[in-house]
Length: 329
Ligand code: KG4
Ligand code: ZN
Image (tube, rainbow, N blue to C red; front, side):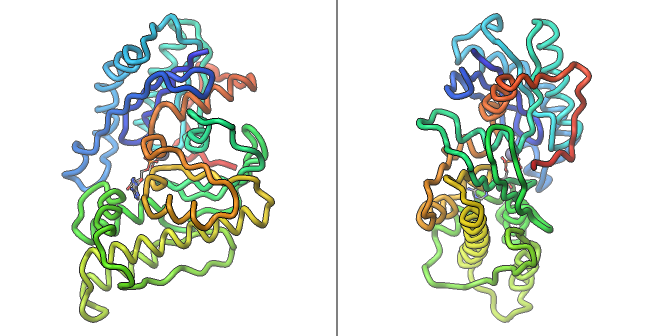
């Protein structure tokens, strides 16, 4: 069965066609990065308006690339939270209209579940439960134990900034523009090894993260409050190393403490080169890391998670509302 996946929670308008929750027939992502770049971050009103303009062309392209007509779609999956309220509303209302017009089941997907289900796309064999999922994105840093399909227990989270948010803020401090994650990733790769070292946060709860102290430290260094500042590349590398070390150490500890069989890494920050390499290197367990294009926001992961909801009979009514503050576990 072909599921249409629609994602508009933030600054990507994305539509995909996925067969049986696994096989990607098409995945089209229209990024708004350039629109928001001049403001240094996502402007919610602009994002909503751009989703309205982009959705129909993106849908048309997704169907064309899949070689699939609307008549061959069996269900419509859409992100209903978490995210920007106005942006979510555009996607959800669009999905409802499609589902109603074609009498199709509507599947309301939690964006964070979508990030996890990216690990089921185009991959054999399937991840084995229990799975420890580390979801690191612009809005979230969650350590989640997944006991089975649709069963989640949140073990840890960030107490302040999300990992991606920290990357974006530090990139701004270093004058690297928006979005900051890919810019820091690239700049850090040019730094000499063994340079500056930055601290790791210590927290009471073992699997929680904190990145705002690290950001403040970088800010003090950049302002020259801690002596002569190292080069931007060295600072970017030290920051990245500190974030990656915290993420990997806590995810591995949580996996060991809870008897996980595998680890899934996903969310926009999972596109980070050092994070991908470090987790794969340090993990004693099999690690599933989707390709970078499936880690950042896309419609295929929403279709994959939606297909599981359909299997479980969890369809949504046309009265389903958006939930901007939705959590997982
Ligand atoms: O999952 P995502 O596409 O959107 C949200 O759900 O938030 O994540 C976006 C975040 C941004 O903060 C961006 O800077 C970060 O992912 N990101 C990266 C990289 N690529 C994207 N962070 C570090 N390294 C990267 N290569
Ligand atoms: Zn995301």
